[in-house]
Length: 112
Length: 115
Image (tube, rainbow over all chains, first blue to last red; front, top):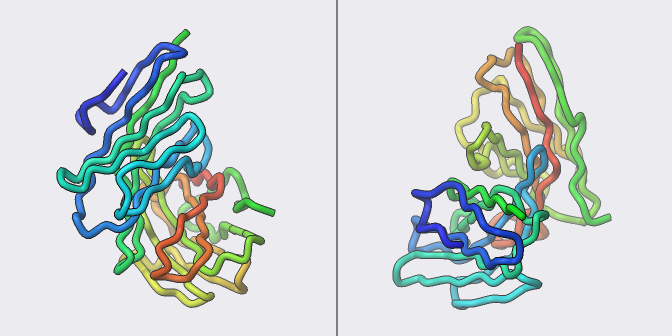
């Protein structure tokens, strides 16, 4: 399943499928990008990050892609599991300000 | 210890009460943050402490008063709050001080309800 930016705040995928969550960031000068997962009633949990001098980074079952030309960030989750159900936030940070600016979030729902 | 802890988990207070939120980390992180998060919204930055000094105040009303007693502790003192201040208050920390561009790690939050 794939959402097309922040216009679709909820993404529903079947267990076992791959998920793609997209984010359009605002500041072309941002140096650092982070994806957070937030489950209901909990604080944001770090998933994966990427610096602006990279275009791809892989973790365990997750991959982050960065396209600076169009200011686009995506999070790919392989073999999505019920435990992946949460709200996912992208966040950008500029070394100049050191302020973390969050995107509006996407809710990922995984159904059996 | 690799986590940020926050107490209490839930807090209900009246508009005339004075209460405090507490945050603690023992990772040796030198920057600590307070965020406010309303339902279905992203976290919004309130304050940043870097090396125990207040470095950023995002024009937060004075009824919220932060305090950093030492490098491991961060408090948020609350007084004369309004019902619209009801939210999840999140604490975060990062290894370096302001300008280091480090990942911020969040605590579980305090769910505040103002009656």
